[in-house]
Length: 150
Image (tube, rainbow, N blue to C red; front, side, top):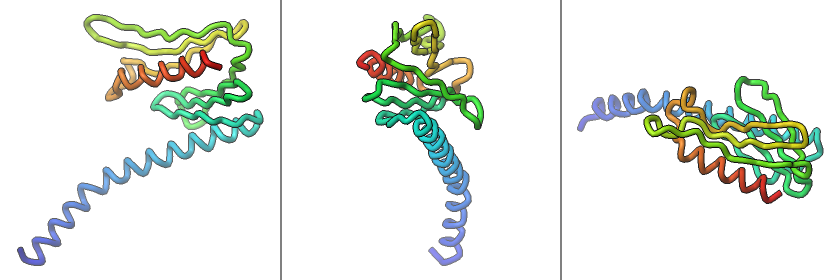
């Protein structure tokens, strides 16, 4: 192989890798920004979030000592955080909508706190294209257990 062929190969490799690296970098920045927003809300409420989860749909944090849950659905750049005191919890239920034809269509964790109901949506088939429903189901089950234990 001569030098020009090697340089062309390296050039094509860089050309094809650049968009992939840009997507990875953008996702990393978005995740870091979401963690920062969650940390700011936790600081305002004087919480120490030891368990944090960021999915394609939701940002969740749990303070296990104070038994408080902070979450926000990811719908835009500015998140609307909600706060649940798990001491006032009256019930939690993992709801999985499933059909024989389509399989899992929706996964949500329904939490009842005094007179307020909260739905943490982990998966919706109509909007979550390219997302694994079973992985979302495992994440939802994990959070159902965490909420039930606290």
